[in-house]
Length: 468
Image (cartoon, rainbow, N blue to C red; front, side, top):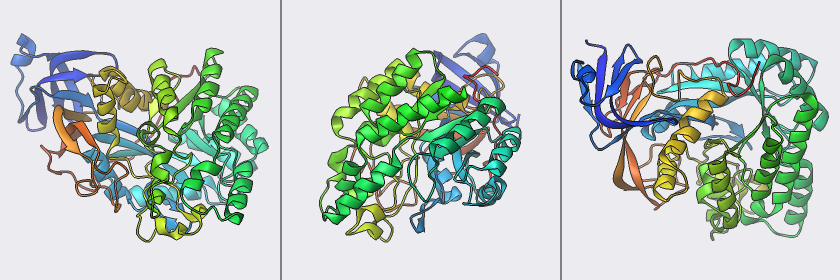
């Protein structure tokens, strides 16, 4: 009894179903689900009962793209694994997949061990890792096989950031060929970084130094071109491809064309591209620096194509690319030179709420909300059905969500370790009320009851959308 929790009377929403049901949790897992007030559920007893009447009972969110403590541009992302995973819990996200970084010229293992050390004992919710390949060579290619066996089944490559993370087409092809054999999934930052650097240099030489020029030099066409090229390289290698943070209509069109051919090509977008635009980058008094990320925010007319892509399944996942830098002392490094503004936005706490607002606004259905925020990311990265659904045997990562309460997103009320909100003053309908992580209540009616170290490392199987 003591380790049993009963969630009564809510509308259980998964990617596949909606039903008024009671959920019984035991030993950190979902033990049973039965229709509310049925003879079966009437007989259940538990040490703790949570009343979910007039609320949704949904799977905990899976954010498959975060960067806690990431070193970037001479500084570090301001959220630690402790603060970032606590904020994730507040926002109804119970699993993050963060990126371990291979140090240039060093082993993948060295980078991975560094990230294990950062996260170990510090996380409030469960976590897993992707591996960033910043130096593709014979040694790192060999190591990819070992990592897949260890449950690190996805590898991120960059067509952007020459001199930092950049891989050329030959290196990309080699990594893709390796993934085609070992079952790994290549994640691609698709922007033509070589061309972008030329445009950056020219803009700065002409005195165009404000944050809005970050968006202007990182052209839509250079995202579309790199997306196209990544798809062709993946075809040559016979490998699947997952394109991260898709921001532009033309890039969505490249993914749609590939998927229409039946190719194993997948796309992710992020809340910032769905809700923000170049209008934010152009905010006066250097305020636009708060919105500098890559791929950059686009003109508002691109938003319709992203929403349509999410409805038609040309885009499958919404992650945050959570990579926060404080305005004071971090974003300010780029005053007078937009290329020195650390790239990244805070968002891990806002994703589930913003996507619920999209349900309210009629962009997506309730089930699609759960699909793009919970189920598909879990399947894409080998965590399903342990994560991403409410079903017997799944981890009891459950959110009791109030779909009617209104809130205003603000730095005053958020829990991310950053001195601004990218969504300051935005009214949204819907709010997380109670969160269970593996059966343990970590948010109890808007009070944090979790702890650093509750979250555990979660090895992953390979992408569940592929036949191996």
